Length: 276
Image (cartoon, rainbow, N blue to C red; front, side, top):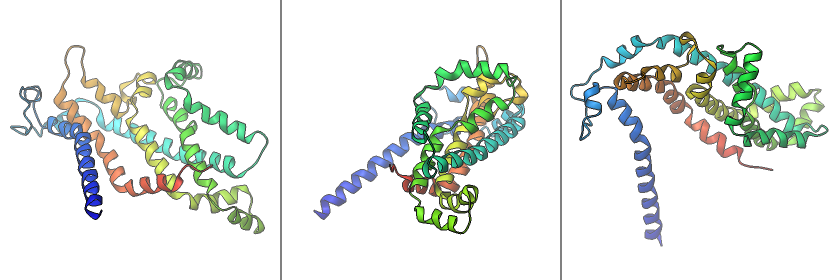
């Protein structure tokens, strides 16, 4: 019996290792391609190890496009979206989970229903709205929708808030605390793991977003990193070496965030659960 359990465990680890290698392969190929010249990338059979290593692709990619400006744009847009999402989503989650008001359940169901609407359905109406209020080719068209309409974040945080014992709120009320004080002093400290998970997911989504900047932005100085990388593709040719170098550079912040906060991601999702 013990041998059988060990065999299943070994098989499970082997399958996980193989799956991990398959998922890691595209990223490895990107890194290796960023150190090749264009003739080495498409050689048949594939040349795995660059010969020679073309380290100049990295400074060349930074000089070919305004990457510094694009990085600044992506950083401050992502920071605002993450901060606003955590504040607005946590407040909405607290209201839906702990404050009873007429129509709260119906309103929450309608709010969740927005998750079922494909992005392609709202793309044109949202574009027309941005055009009408003068936000086309501005970063507001990326910040406001991304920061204030995150139904998934509200849902995940609500599940977490519902697990907080009501005794803590009642004790705070007896001490004279109102809704705002309870939210700030009781709820927020207890939902830190969920906030960390939502913050990381939101960061990854905002940093890697390509479609929204492609739709709303026209000025190169306002481009984000993913949109700027697309400029390496010309009408007839593409500078794949510089594109791979730029892509590798753009992934660095994401890797840093994930390595630092992977524990919070797992803890937030595990503790949140799916409670009624």
